[in-house]
Length: 410
Ligand code: ADP
Ligand code: ASP
Ligand code: MG
Image (tube, rainbow, N blue to C red):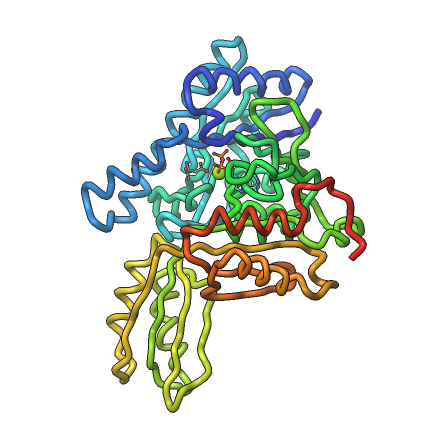
């Protein structure tokens, strides 16, 4: 008998009929003798709808109340799912984040899990119930509701799998697995059978929303093998696992994009010790995560500083830097119509020239690169948002990612 955690995303539970179909699928595993813990998202579109409504109430909605609102979507699906299971003649119990005691910090709308109490879940499993837990939500030690950030149900699932020491953690979604690029953007994208935690971390952090980045971080840390697969077929999906030799010879595994960022430039700031700290301390104090940072070489006593922040934090970050007293008469500008295009692959560690190929491909398409950043296994370029699809296709073709997945020799 295995303990299996299965998570179903918004499109998988988008209608009552789909919820019933998911309940049937879960019961098929239960009937094989497995203990089933199910994590559900809100119905597709619900969370976006809540965000829209909140902005009609307040320009910058109060974050505590936002979480009370956002957490309601998952409450609907878990209750309907438990009813469907009961209607199919089995027992189930729906549990909210605060009932389980998924304890988080107080960072509303992007809270981090601190601990999970597994007692209530294991008690219910031992009573032969299907346990269905609301994804994406937790509770602070002061009993305030929190949410884990968009896409956070994946993180709930992996955290539960780790806490329960589950035998399997499966993420069911609307595509067949992790692809070489978003299959909804480029139909030549190919499903990857196995991908390393590190590559998946990069892909997720660079925009491949098929898995929430924090779920991958947790999976890596607690060695939870993840199976990403389709709700609508029985096909094998993608396994996210530890690295092995074959994988290392793949040069580039995927191309990804993110339209979730915005760029802020401070021109003419003093080039003296302490300036970066003055700029970035209030930004990090506000819980804003800065991604790329570029400081130009100095011209006279002055320099320019450009960085990116999540698009949702753009106005907040812009206001913070506008209020800074940096003792110079420089100005602040920014843009939120940028996209970050990235190529990822563990093979990059041992091969040169990958970044150059990327720059060459973008140049050939007439796409200007505004910022560049690299790590051991990725290269990212910020470009004008309107060229996103063009860049993805050109890079996917240039690195032959649609071809059969034979490890390249060079
Ligand atoms: P869910 O609601 O099930 O959590 P998401 O919408 O969060 O699903 O994630 C699935 C989507 O991720 C797919 O529909 C696809 O458009 C997108 N996606 C982006 N990059 C990739 C990729 N490299 N491989 C697969 N899907 C991707
Ligand atoms: N419902 C939440 C969202 O849309 C969480 C999730 O689906 O993972 O972001
Ligand atoms: Mg998701």
